[in-house]
Image (cartoon, helix red, strand yellow):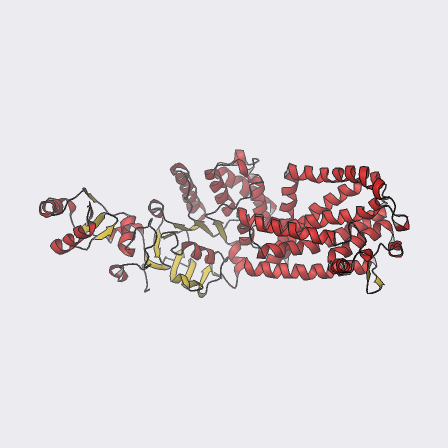
Length: 264
Length: 332
């Protein structure tokens, strides 16, 4: 057990250290929310205006974009594993007296920590977009973002065990980000899209992460405005959504740990 | 393979018994057996693809053997892999440093991963960085380091957790002679002060000369195991190499007229005689084929390898893939 714990913190520590030392990555994560603010703040609101239930589009999309940043950052855990493999550093990690599961957990926690910095930066520009953020909203939002991140990072690491090259993993992840994010109700409410899209969206675990974050930020009466997520006539509550993401994440993570232990 | 050469005095630190590894149809390592004693420098000498790296990877617990057993400091490499990992240090053939971090951060990561106490950690980082002459560069990114500096840093890192055995996979590849010499100075020092045991693989003969004992490995098998001196000593007399435009005919003539057993490599024919200086005048007088050159020399480990396996260490394995002869050595 101590080896799982040590593996997790040592690997996560290095992920964060690498992030902090990489000026271009730090800069990108600061520029991203500013860019986001500029584009959405300036253009979008005037075009679309207010949706049903008195929520304007930017307020609707804002939580989704936070989820998107979390998902992209979490999938990068897979790229990080592949990069270590290519640079040779993975051998240094593998030959140390650490548990394989701990190493994987460290990659996930590291990605979540880095993703969380971006989330916080995005939250910081929220008020400028007219999104009302209280302290209690942030406190409830952070654990959801972390659970979503850990869940999705399992997928990223699983991919890196099959597609072994850094380049390959990067391509695969880019390919995946698109449907995972666009079919997750980030840009449109999943209850009011064509049926095929609705089915795909509701099978996508990220949808529940997005909606949970949205409910935390905009309140739980979204569903009555047709902006929530309804599965078989049942409107999903935050707790249920977190459980769905957590359960799927556990499965993905277990699969990633199993595959990694077997192949490395 | 029968019993080869002496076993080391005292409890072996590395004990390998009939170790083998199969990849599909390929036997990468076949029935390898040897022991290494405390403080010994033990070398695996062989060409690329002979099974050196496969063996080292199994000893380091990164690859499971398909047959046989291996133990390090009395710990089994399969059932007690974590304990084994704690007692070994590794320097791989390919670099395994994090280039985005500083030298010191690389060492610190290693110390955390091996769970070193804070005081041991700081003392060891300072001591080893000083030893490999990188203390002044400790805050610099590894990205800015030369190949030799990186290898030195990797050696420092491999020793950080005070392992019983240091594994070096081809430690000299890509290094200039000066760096090579420095590295051997560090290693000799550690051996003298800490009783460190060193296991290395190499295809450089001059590096093999640094070893107390050498296992010559070819096609996944140990074909000889002894001290460098005794391996060379087993080659009687001098080696004569003639370079001829028709090497096959030249070899035939050597065989028929002088009753010797020549080996052909490219256009040169090499054979062994008890006394080269006395042999040559008569040989040249009676030799009936054109000759480019003749040389006489004392045997080196290169010759030992050639004699044992029938091919030179640097050339690629021949297409039939079999050692041509090694019978003479089996009885030792």
